[in-house]
Image: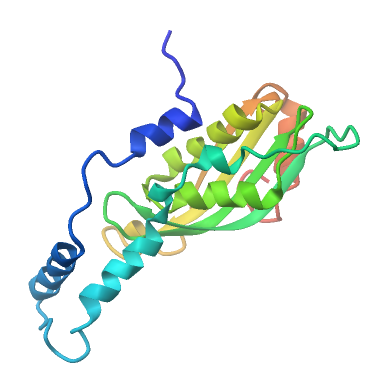
Length: 211
């Protein structure tokens, strides 16, 4: 039987295996792309663009510098026996498609059923951000978020729904604006209990796919 990779194992698989190129080399590569596009990298409006692009990439892909599992390390047990769903809705998603390096923009909804421990809600949002700030496909991103929460917090179940637009489809290629992609990952009781799953899906904002 194949072992299902934990959130941490997925993280380890994503770690860079080679040393990063020198910043000057990356800026030179951006300059070359500008020339290939047909413009002059030495004109006034573009002369500082290579440096700006590198700085932007540092922000876009900062998730490679973060261990999402560590973000969930500090938990709280003083919950007054709270054992119902905890749901975070409408978390903005900004990621980049690993095939064309263009934006993926959407929303993430996350729920979990605690088993004695809860985590600060900002930590869930940070886990989403840590995985989103990498080159991604939405299917992998959805699984990474759910599996990491499940493996670290060990709740009774986790549910993650992502609905996002992919600029690689809406602004190029088939050019289908207005199309969004929906993915979901359910673990534990959310996967096994139909009524609980429907309760979660019904709690999502009106208009969300699956509602």
